[in-house]
Image 1 (tube, rainbow, N blue to C red):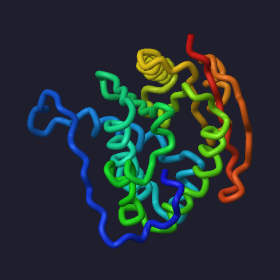
Image 2: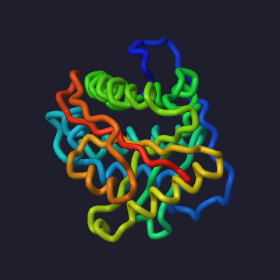
Image 3: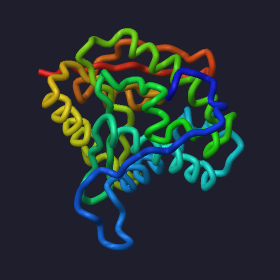
Image 4: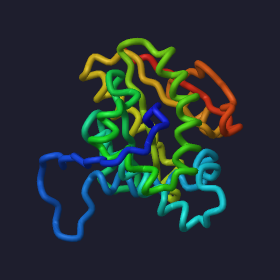
Length: 224
């Protein structure tokens, strides 16, 4: 998310242009819509999201997460990569180092700068302050040829089947094609750490974000 806290601008033009491709059948979800829905559902109980949307019901929180990830997916459509399963049970989004973290112009073009109006200022500031600390550490300490897996999500009833491993490997395959040599991600949930370690990631930093009080683990996997 954008590092500048000054979100109050008089006019924001949403310039996102849909990625070219085969037009889906009427009523069918696009790849971007699938990714946003799956990731939103997967993150509804994530510590950071419970904190950011404190006081909302689960249904309200999922609705807010869908708005959030609609914009995140739009950003990766423009500036990174999107991976979805054909059965629509999992999705992952990632950014190359030159686009991590997004610039103000990229936030405007992808619609990310509109998040305070969609999510509310309080929730947006909570998310942004936490990510400025945790993702900021990754940006400062990662090498020049890095890629960042922004989010990986698997539907609740499909977990435990190795889908996250397959999605991450697909992201890494895309990174390798762009001569990226190290893959980074971070998790704010301790139970995810051993899962990623089994997939070849190493904990490079553990911090408790001052703004949120939530623990965060930055992890790296070298790409051969």
